[in-house]
Length: 404
Figure 1 (tube, rainbow, N blue to C red):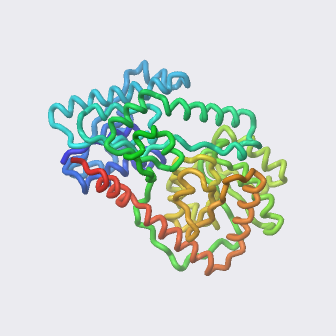
Figure 2 (cartoon, rainbow, N blue to C red):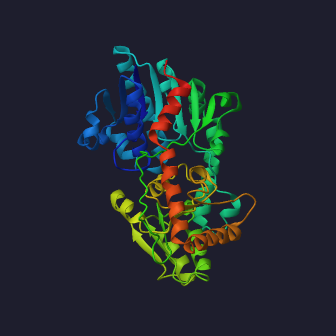
Figure 3 (cartoon, one colour):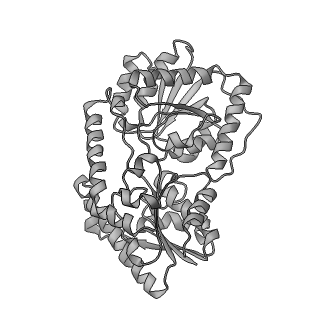
């Protein structure tokens, strides 16, 4: 059995999309004699440096566009064209390998979106698309306090989602796929009705299922919450800051640490200042992934109020560290988190005020927990992380679709 993974993003220990490509490659090995991965040339140095890249049966094909295209990639107007061209060039290179020694199946892995299309279905072997995403939208009621730029970006995203439904690139990929996996119910709506019979919902991210509960752990002496991710409007960090202000009326010592950087940082600082939270909200900046993982275990919970996150890898990483999670019932986090491992805030038919109050209430609930109650939730977090493993994700896709 020889399978091909199309994984534009594929790098070890990077998190996010690169981690998806890398882990899918490693965990496909038990199901195939040979796993070939076509990815970007600039990933080669990092991949070669990892000993697991030498695993028997694992092979990499590296491809990149010419230098002129790489230079233009920095221009926003060229982004869509760049990725479409990369997909086409990757397909042509894969077709050349296929002629020499045919593949038995091909999987589109990354990017975890179909908006750039995929031509791998043209190889003439079973083609499995996804899990992919892109249909998640921020509820209109939860955009009201965003600054003008944030609202414009969300409207542009709404328009892009509409276009995806009618794009010939996406429709050809749907048509060619033997099975389509999407990350959330919202993304099911991206798939034309005539192809939904072969569509299933499944997360694109997972864990290594090695989380171990340390029964000696205790919650911090004072309630401390942490957010980790890009500081951009869609992450809903402003809702968490407003919730902190409410929570401090009951728990005056509660704090919030923000790990990450991004264009919304200045605005978020102004939100914190306006609410007299300068000392209570710490902007920790960007941290390497290993330092973030070490840091997480010192907090009461991760607060991740993203408005339309496809997956939320940091949510899984927090659970793996035994850290409970507070999130909204939107996107991937809303699928990942359940009551034994955290608190999910409902957003249907409610506005920002109600969501902020619900996040504040969740902070207070977790902050007031006894050590034994918090330990139980922490144990639930590691158990949930182990349920959502790369092994189980890969097994589901291979067993349900089959490569032959």
